[in-house]
Length: 220
Image (cartoon, rainbow, N blue to C red; front, side, top):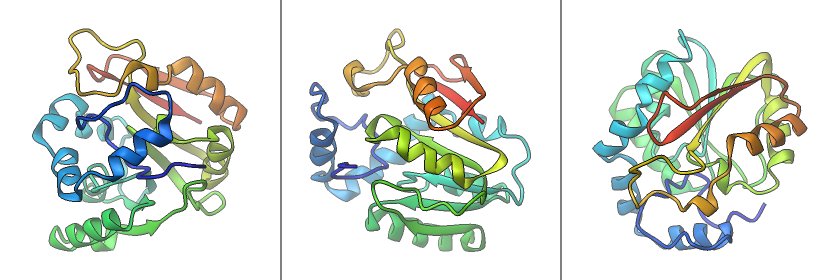
């Protein structure tokens, strides 16, 4: 996998996304000042459109559940899930985000519920049948060799484990902010289901109504 920069890129930061070259988009993002990335990832407007607590609530009671947040970035979802009592593996390829998340977890007294793990570009490093949930937010369209990657995710989930994907709608939702990823970079829910089926997933629930600009896919 040739993702040059962050597996956890929130692509609404202003930059050019008009190219089909995902590797180039990621390289551009990696040149951004880290503090600006953190500021964007944790911006109040993100909560208004992404509704993280609503997504987490849809998972039911996650206390003591084993969850891996792939491309976790600053821990926007990881911290919230840890607060609910889940044991969360905060997985990212960028050591800066891992350091930030580890420090943040200590500040919030969540260290016992948060495991920080550096992963390579081509594997989530999940143990066999280890997790109840895997969640990947705003990142699916950045992963290359997706069938092979999510085959590994499938193997890392428990028999009844669930993969949750949150990403931007294609076509774009009406009145969508211009700073979101270009439509050319997005992947339709149909294509995602086809790719995940090749990776071994068999059941899919697609929710286009929970969020204004994004879909939520749950796969087993």
